[in-house]
Image (cartoon, rainbow, N blue to C red; front, side, top):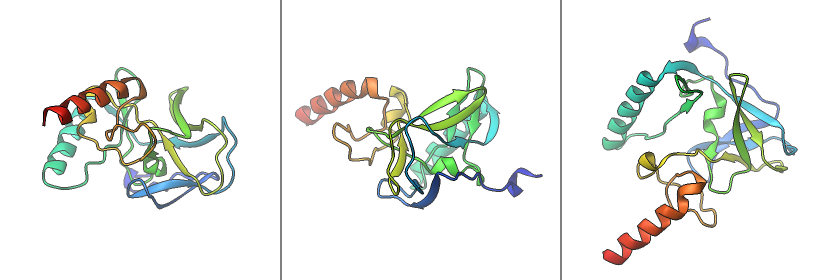
Length: 171
């Protein structure tokens, strides 16, 4: 079956709907117990070089005022998953600085897993874990307590908050 004809991933746990965080998001269809594999993040397996080309195209779109969303997910040191394919429903899960899910690579598959019990109707979120180099390219709209305003992995957020405070003071 050609990749453009694949059927969307399905999960008994989630459905897509309009998000209060960004665009469309994933929402719990029913209560989800902590530890549940909610949905698999799927897509084309691509090289790091191809992943870099996708990022360059994304940045060019952003400069033109287009969609700056990125769906490349690191699988290992040589391969990424291009999740920006129409059949990857998991790509709709938004980032949050206070997520209810986490991603784990299990036997070569990327899973979004519930960190805690999730109530029916709650938006499914996880920490995108962006590194320092990417954070200023991606505004965070989660509005969680302690959110620095940019998507950045948790252990570096304090550093960004300090830098932003210095920049505001200097302005």
